[in-house]
Length: 145
Image (tube, rainbow, N blue to C red; front, side, top):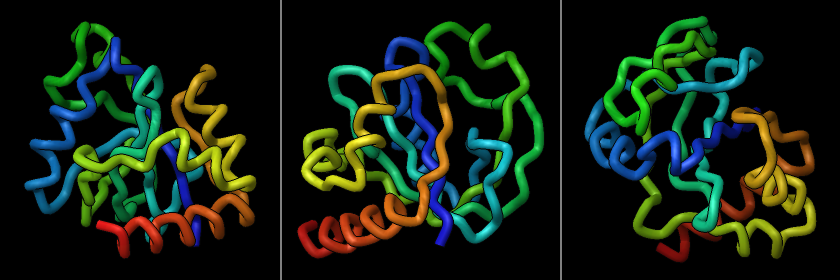
């Protein structure tokens, strides 16, 4: 299974507010990398002091360049730029119990992902070993909650 990760900066985007609203919708458009494929898993992360994975969804469509249409940008001008977007479904909001940076760092295959949460770049593809480790982590996480 293909895993893609997109992250937002809390000083630029109110991720938790967006996830609260969009988790009640059947289908939502979300930013991702241009190589995302339908059927893949999109992990939605936050950077900053509360870095971690805050949602999981299934990608439905091929990416297209479009302007995000939502109200959660701290500065609305930041959301006025074209970016790669996909339609997602089955959005699982994990904001009450996110997969923390500490949990990611505890898994050797996911240390690079944890580090990526603090560097530039908004989208990332997980390689096979990272995807396997993330799949295992998500299974353990699901059993825990």
